[in-house]
Image (tube, rainbow, N blue to C red; front, side):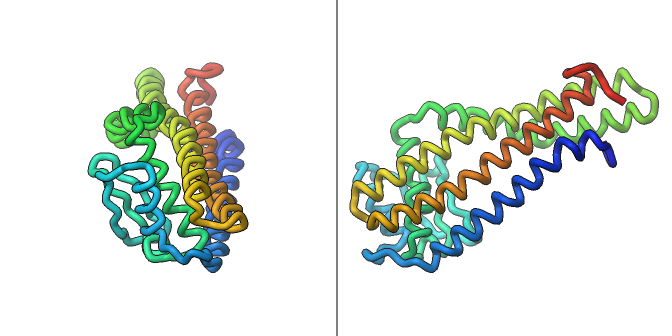
Length: 237
């Protein structure tokens, strides 16, 4: 795998896409973090307003440290917002806060793809620990002439790695749907003006690109492992 031209050929596009997506989300968020909303509501206030609008009473809103560390925890029913979002009164804060509430709405309504993603989490916790050691172990075994054992380890590792790729693919519709719900909610509640809604949409679109980039990068890496393990096209040296 190291210094493998095939690996670099497959992974370079994904790496460049991931770097571009990270740049887009940071630059877009930074731009609209400087644009305040006319109503002057904080992200926490907008989140609470949407929850009240939807009749969701059992979700707490808490601040959490970190930059864009915002997330919804379905186990504890807690919406955790980063400082820029929790206290911020910007267009960016409005969009991100509403997006995370979108996940809370999905949870309350039993959104199917969110249930599928949640069901994969326990398996993901196991496969993430075992996949790469098995794959690297397979490479090492094959380099010492243990072709059968090495290939078997790589096949096992590749199948475990595939679980992560499936998880990331399932994540895409979950995130897109949360953004759709977010934009609908803040527009219906007159929480932002039309121009502010456009800015919030740009922030959420940039954020969505990071999930797309992660899925593509992992898919390309899986393709490489499938080829090297012999599961696709026969084993290559």
